[in-house]
Image 1: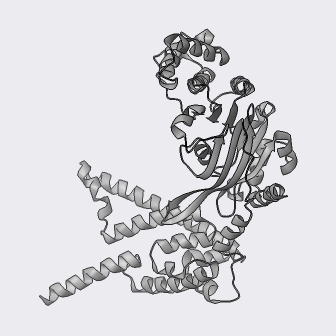
Image 2: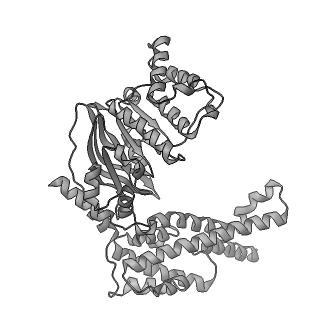
Image 3: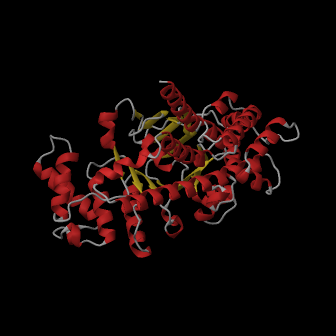
Length: 461
């Protein structure tokens, strides 16, 4: 009986030690406790709740926030969680592989590959986080060696020594970037798109995350608008907020009609063409558009009116010569134009396109954007995302530039004419403008905060 009790205590200790510390080694546990003490003080310095240091996995994520490496902290925390679960289960996380009828050698190889991949990934993310902390505390890079091998030492020194202070606090950064908000509103236009977006939020890792903040603009009818921004700047999130697919804390008015309040009716006034094409390859161009017309045009439209509208759209988009061709037989540019034509059937007032020139060469892309220019000239608003803007920039009226600020929030860095954008950013090409606002780790100049602040000041002037 006594041996069973002792065995039960031992199992309980293993479970707790693996769950909380990640190991049953006394030395490792001592080092972990010292790390927690150091994190407690560092969190206090960085404006993060100190008690996060007591919660496994969550504390590593909070450390990434202190390092301004939150995007790396999320996958890093998930990998640590999987590793911790596997320890608690004694390797049982991989048991489902045995139920697939695989032999022991195959299972061993798969498990080894998974574990090595997780180990390498977690090490890479930890290096990014440690590097961020070195920048935040403005110390020499040789500290990295201590972080890698004895992380509790810099945690204790930086946490308890008054000599080492972070250059900014996490909450200070959020407050500073919130201060940059223009707090204005765009003009409500009788004919055009008016956007007053205060913020678009989501919940990630049990905390509110602001994806977009403080974006105000008024786009007149007849304008072809380029939407620029680096990866993660919020371009797609912004477009989804405009068309009502993912509502934000915002007012979006199209020709004075509220897109959110009257979504069922207004969704026919907004055409959205995604990057991927979803069309049946064995249908002809004409039949594809006729089928789409039955879905997108009002029920009271007669068959003759549907036919006339389809023929009108084919003529506008240059598809009449291939009306009887199978979709599979079309060129890349023709397929893009057909995809656009499907959305254009309902004659929307606002037309949104996500990388319509993806996979097209310069000649086909030029032809496609000339058709979009023609649509805008008919009094429509056309907003386009493209990663190769400079080859067709002469066709655009305006440019919107979104950028990630220091708090990783999508902000409006500029909205206005193309020529005005060149002057505002001091760059001659659109690609150079994107590079200017992109963070250094993505090959950019890291000037997002500067231009967001400058544009906010211009708006408030």
